[in-house]
Image (cartoon, rainbow, N blue to C red; front, side, top):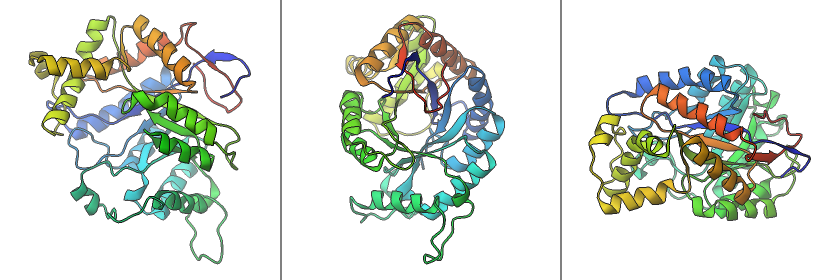
Length: 351
């Protein structure tokens, strides 16, 4: 982590393009395109979209297409994938897609890479994801992908046009110490999914820093953490605004239902039993859910505990204006004097 001075932590957005039961995937995609320039106006640094398949609650099945639209709708945001799930795709195709995006929006494209399928086994097979790939296949795919962003080797007979003309900023995504160590050994920046495995965040980032080896594109460790984030005027209101997502998580956990998230009306009518309330308390406590004062305190604690260079907000909220309001309040909370990060010379846009 850089140590040349103090500045406010950069904030970014992770968008899973949530679909609610009183909406549609089409409307969710259009809301995302409309939201990105409004988030940009608040000073956010990156806007990443996830990859999921056969998941009616998440309209993020084609990240490169959506990234191109988001980049065209904005001017300063870095836009990218959080992430492309590389085993679902031929590295050559990913290089061609993201080389094209970088050519059209130079200096603004991020290529975050993950190794999970982002779906069920049946759909993974339909994506041509081989079930017999070994543990070493993901690093091999990353190496192959990286080769396409370098000047072509005439002996290979393959040139990923226009990837060799410009390389996006390549990140590795993960939620375990193993992925952190792999990212460090490859000299890649690392994004950790705190919303998935908050107990491991600090240890994983430490493993990353210990394992880091400088590469041609990165001379020192660089990290971000993605965090479930809902900010409202009070703690109680924030929990209410987050309730459609939280009830959706209960459904996913208890009955494995992955249909659209419940509406605000459905969530308000649900009566939680003791086990459900305990599950939600455990889920929410390490995340950034609450009033601006609560979130400011939680954010400061998260940064002190992990040393992360950047925070990426996953905000799954029913209602476009409520969602934007959460991003506005998060930006205000992060501007408090207690929430500081060490500054460096990596070109990051700071709030």
